[in-house]
Length: 73
Image (cartoon, rainbow, N blue to C red):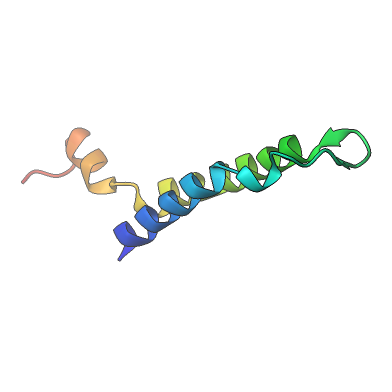
């Protein structure tokens, strides 16, 4: 189940990275930041949080234990 959530999250992030709906907009966010740049700043934060969650929940700890010699199988 974890694997599918990660794959779907990755696909969603890949699709959202192509922000074609912002290409023709010339308005500013906070009066100085172009909307495309503001979108990608927010996107970067969301992507970093997503990948931090992936590392936290899906890290293969059994491989670390094996590499450190804790697992004698």
